[in-house]
Image (tube, rainbow, N blue to C red; front, side):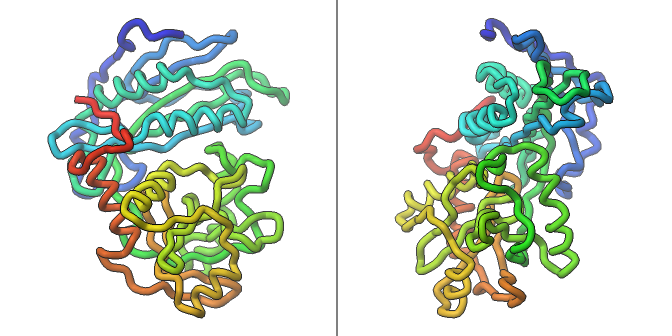
Length: 355
């Protein structure tokens, strides 16, 4: 469909904004006043609308509840230094969302519905965008198979929703991770590159086992022989080895992280050497023993960067050097925040600014 007019907005009669303590946010606790809803049925998208945030009503036979056709995105909006609002890398998130939907045999959301709907939704809830440093408005576009039919099939009906909520920064302190060599997050030929719900549900159990051993997250390895690093928890994994920023190459078992792409681009802009190549466990062990690894961190939308203090490999805890403000991941994060806030030039045209 073509957007010929503004999306209708039905404003809430009771805002919950007064309940939010912006100085003490918790990730996932608060939800903004409104959400966008748009349905797909009979081969076409209906008109989107913005309505007060509310619970959903769906049949117990809704196909998403049984066969896993559900996909989501995670993105952020920021308050800029001049008070305007910036939705970061909306185009890149839309492209990834579409790629995930196609892998799950779900109807792609038209770009105008995604873009215009998102911009109007954030404009309606602009007072929910935090002004505190390090905080942001987390945005969750998602879609699920809504057709009420319990036979195994690709759904013919879908519901697309976007909601948001203010969140703090995550992982301010370095974390401890364990290289996982028994369980896998994703396999080649599977859905690892897609942001579908099953990828996350399947990762909970081995992560819980690692936490019981005193670690915060796992470093996933490939399912073929468990010899190569793939991701760090729910984030892309990055290492600084021999003064080079190294990260595993994208594949159908690794998520095409928007933050990953942003950090690699900024690192090159700042004159650092970057390599997208396989990183083996053996290479990490050697780098620790020879003291050629100076940093390791996860990269993702929620945390931006999650510095790693310790990596357990085959039962041995290897410690990273202490970090400071000059550490590469902190320099990259600071540069990214300057661009998002409008205090540094947006040469890559990542910002989508609304009033």
